[in-house]
Length: 146
Image (tube, rainbow, N blue to C red; front, side, top):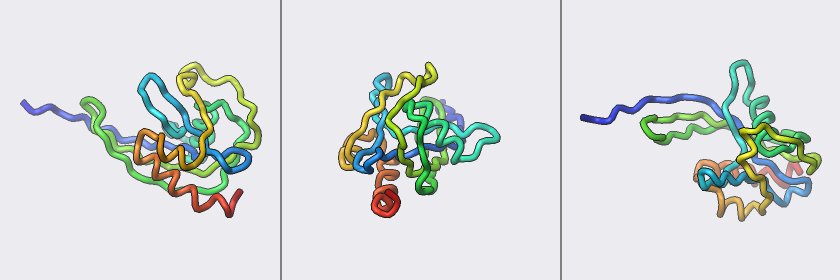
C-alpha cells in the first residue's frame, strides 16, 4: 500500500542580518537538528511578512535593535518532512542591527545559538541551499545600503 502524504502549506518570513559594519552576517546554530540557519519563522494571522520577520529575528537571535534595509522578495520552498509534503513561501529582508545588545529570548528560541560570520563563511556553512539563495540576493545590496 502506498504511503499517503499530507500536504502542508504556510508562509514564513525572516532576515539576512548584517552587523553594524556590514562585514558579517548572523547565522543561527541549532544543535538539536544539526543545522545552521538564517532566522525566520511562521507568519502569524493578521501579521505582515515585515512584522513577522522583525519578530522572528528578534525572538530567535535576541537582537531587538534591527532595521530593515531591503525587501529581498520571496521564494517557494518544497520539501518532505516525515509523512508531510511541505510547501512554504518564504519572504526575506536584508536587515542590520543597530546595537549588539541582546535581550532574553522566549524559551523555545533558546535552542538557537547566534553567531556572526563573514558572508563567504555563511555560504559555506548554511545547511540548506534555499537559505544560501538569500545570501546571494542580499550581497549586491551591501554597498548601496550600508
